[in-house]
Length: 617
Image 1 (cartoon, one colour):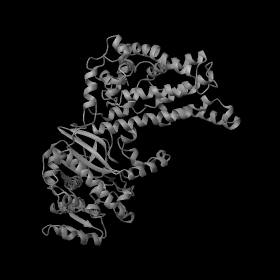
Image 2: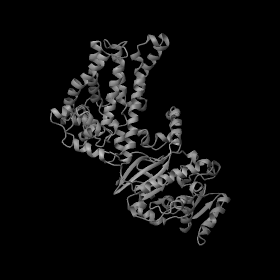
Image 3: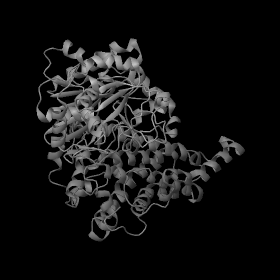
Image 4: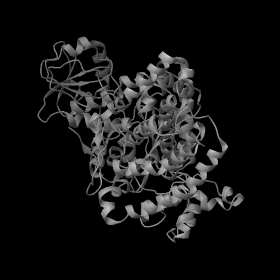
């Protein structure tokens, strides 16, 4: 909220939370009743079209969120090169409140405003009148109202809430206290009201006007410059009639300049235009895609995960991933996105972080978990990963980390395939095994003298078992085949600590994928389960102490621009595999960590802690 919230700052339906759209339910029910009882032709078309207008406005805003986040992840033409944190995401989560308010006001207008009923689809005179009324009274009144909001009395009570976001996202444009948004709605209603009272109103210009307002608001706050230079060369007058994202960005960084709504004309005539406007515009257009030092190469998991990546649903991505029933309603979109990503023949950038002097990006291979289980998809996936590695090489990237199933033994020999395929590649390839294993071993309670190791024996499992045996901890296995597979891989001088038992009485179980329900049920009551797998285990036992998260570490404050959760992990926590690549680059290590190679776990763990990464409980 604002520094010192004023009267009517809270939205009336705040207490409803995610059920706030229920305030529109009576109108939806009434519309359905009218349609079913009278038929489509007997119901006011303007009244019916309010619902589609709401849906289209939500989709329009979401499209801008996705576009802006994709563009800013690449860093090309970025205006303010600073990070966004979770606090801003939480503050801006209610961006659709203004759409609900607008729908209510439109509904009241259609019901009670003289001349607002049974409007024609189009009237040219009304459309021209609306454009003139916006350029004149609306822009003029907004300019002076905006300047008034920057007076300390109104600023600390209302407008400071909006300006809490220095780095803007498209939806920042509508993040205001309720009273302030209501005032804006009154301003924007001036052209529509006058057209209705003058008898020149029509439906299509109304919806075009709403779309124009949304478009300009979103564009002005998207934080990347997209207005081409040639447009102002062809139409010089346009410079005074249309602002650019860089023009409005200066208002958020300088506060006392560039007050105009969408038309800089008023800043020119009242001498409040920022003198750096033209220079920032030119520099933003020249800004090239940022260099990248570290790449974490991951992939999509299930159908709903497309919404959880940073360019998806901002509020959803800012929380640990869980499957939501509401998203199952969108299954046609989910399936369509799956087909499109499958057809799309390249990785895409979804996230950018900064730590000290490192630029870090997250690249996504457009494949889902189930693709990695299909033999006929393996060649295509390896080609996609190979292309990403070559592109990283071209960009001068120092480290590429293979995340999730991109490092699967059955896919590419834990990444060994790429070293063989690109022997002259300068980029270091990392699978993160050493740090993941170090996180697991350091998660085992101090004083533990025996653990059960259960699940598929991965490279991390082998490293964990070897490390625990060196520490004289008894590693008990409950599966004969896994025991016989692992035994030869433990050094002979410590192999005596690897045991086979069918009881599994230890109170600490280190578990991986492939652990079935029957095996979990063999654990004694109060057991602590510590996963070593990339994916979280299925929670079966309610009577056990805890299920730890998959190997992960908390982030230092120096790692910035973190405002989405990595899959199922909590906020400001990254998987050990992802952290390993960052540490590898920070330390300047030159070796690969692929295939059977495992770096010194103690060295990697100490380096991670030295750089501020921390163990999580």
